[in-house]
Length: 110
Image 1: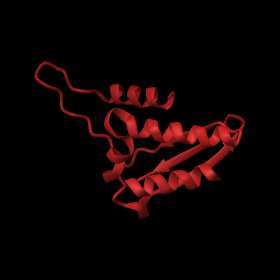
Image 2: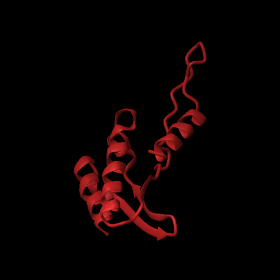
Image 3: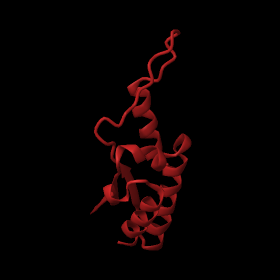
């Protein structure tokens, strides 16, 4: 439970809407999965530039897990209407939804 308390403390300190922070913790044969939901307006603060804030939080959760002999993973739920896909540039250089999905999958492995 230290992992859930730690995550709640850190996330509530980062966001503008701490009352909207919801954390679920499940344990299975793969380890501990901590699922985080925040207000849509706070997603950028939790993810950070190039995902650096999310990576840092995941790293710290893993350290707490190692201390307790558990594998801890963090899943950040996307709020309703949370995905903003920039429009394609005239040359077609916009970011597609599949690119965003792939980037999020890449972050999960870190």
